[in-house]
Image 1 (tube, rainbow, N blue to C red):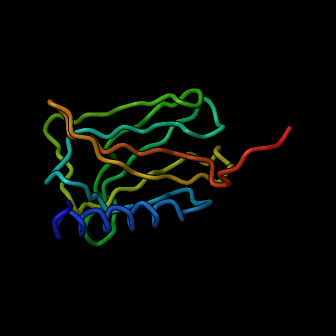
Image 2: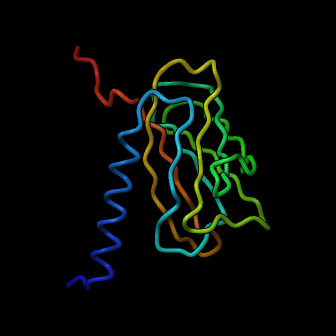
Length: 139
């Protein structure tokens, strides 16, 4: 049985995922880092789009929403490909705002959702890039 804190955390995560999935057709998509850990030391981007061979970057923002730094650049090939970036001394704290920037050459509107993974050596923010239409064509 879930205790009250677990239920609150679950509801917050669900609301955040739903909010993140509602972001459509933006060149820059932002979200606030949540999840169970106090900080994270790796970001992974997963290509779940129909696009191939493109790059994106993840930005860390200051509290005033100005750009603090580029956390990393990610090279994505075909659907299912992923790329990770670990800055050994830079941990991303819970509550930080991150943004995903796509190059101007990416014309197709994309969306995303975020999950958090706890591995023995890494606490990972996993960003799943998806096609914003979310559908498929019938044959």
